Image (cartoon, rainbow, N blue to C red; front, side, top):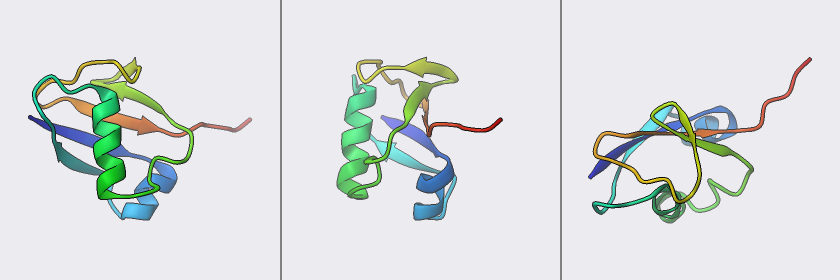
Amino acid sequence: MRVRVLLFAAMRERLGTAGLDLELAPGARVADAIAALEVRHPGLTEQRFVCAVDETYATPSTPLNEGSALALIPPVSGG
């Protein structure tokens, strides 16, 4: 199945793109997508981030579906 990964901040800058597509096995979860990203782009996910699937915060065990959007969201600061 195909999942769209949305990138922000340093991840976006490192890859030079706001997003990419991943092909994953049916039944894949967020953890599987992150592992696949690490294979394609070693070190990309070393920084801290939270995940959202289809605009809802997610955990590593959250299932993905065909066409899901997986956002990797870095910590935010400001004041």
